[in-house]
Image 1 (cartoon, helix red, strand yellow):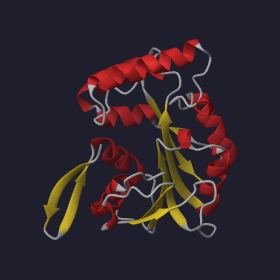
Image 2 (tube, helix red, strand yellow):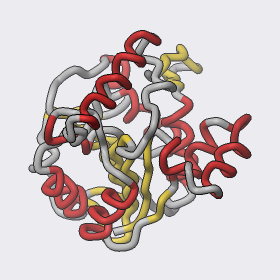
Image 3 (spheres, rainbow, N blue to C red):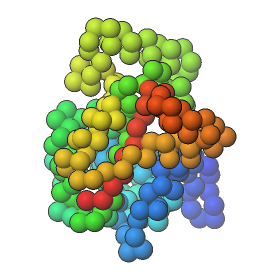
Image 4 (spheres, one colour):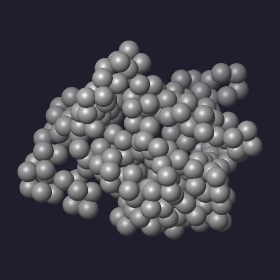
Length: 232
């Protein structure tokens, strides 16, 4: 959940630790001339507003439903659109960002191809989804109370037991690291797993534990989400 932090001078300030952490990682990949970004599956648009705020880019957000927050709409351009048929010219953007949206898109391979099409040569993409291998999820969600988090995890394990823990069966499953990497490399080429870097940035007090979990090989089951970044 993105937090509205009021105003700084004449500008609205938005705060969300997770999106700000991703912004810091993305900033290291962008070039000095990069100016335009696209958020695919932007939801309320507040996430897009934070990216614009943190990266200094002109951001356009698209989502299948018009549920935009007016505060975000005042900061970035928000449009209704289908990720599988983006209404933008080829190579229109320096950055394409999609965070916890891909798993909700039927025929998501078409969405990835469209992201690649509108991204300029050498442009940066960053995509995050739930980790299908996770043991426990939803713990860090600010949009759910504990009873909802417990219920969601029970639903996940019920779907696993029935062999239906897949996005196409309606489960909030996401992808395994290997699945997402493979799909991204088919479309974009070489990709970089930034999952550990992301969790070290978000949970700074626990970053040594995150590194230890990664080194002993169980981070792939403990980290509830996965994140990749690369260039077209």
